[in-house]
Length: 240
Image 1 (cartoon, rainbow, N blue to C red):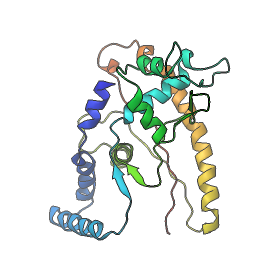
Image 2: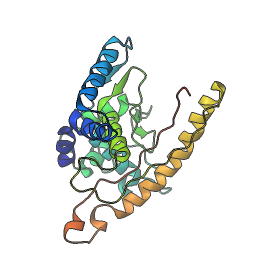
Image 3: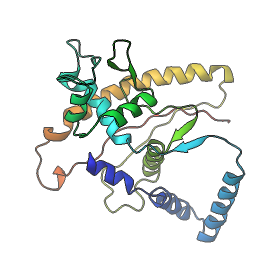
């Protein structure tokens, strides 16, 4: 997990911008044109009157790992395979959960973060309940930087087909479906419907990743080096 954090901390805006610049250059735009467009975009951003804040969440990877282990580790699920309500200490507890995930020290900071982001709640009995089968950072007052930046980076990597990368690897892909004549009154229904379908599919993908991750691979050589694999899904909602 420490390695994951270090790798994530080295991400910079250039990782996001370089393949975009290459895509635009190869479409015929000159570097001077790109600089003018960047200045125009920066000016537009500075004029924005949005009050939405962007907040850095240093514990992104650790929180996601905790949620995943709570859902899957035999010590923290009941006979029906559902996550238990956990006390703070004990054999099957929050402290034991964090320790099994390789997190040392007090669980308080990460537990506070999980409660803050709406993934965990304290029950009347004093135990802690996992509310979602995935890590979410939804908040009406701010945008979390790390997961949103990672989403932009992943989407850019797919859209630019591996520009500026030494090892292109397997061909990436994306699908999109849309119509431009849907009445506004159906937006909420669409978001709810796609969220439900995407969540079910995400669980299937997560099961596959769980089966093939870690010690399940016995391959040696270059192919034995681990890769970050996953899928990201999002709805489209914009003006025609």
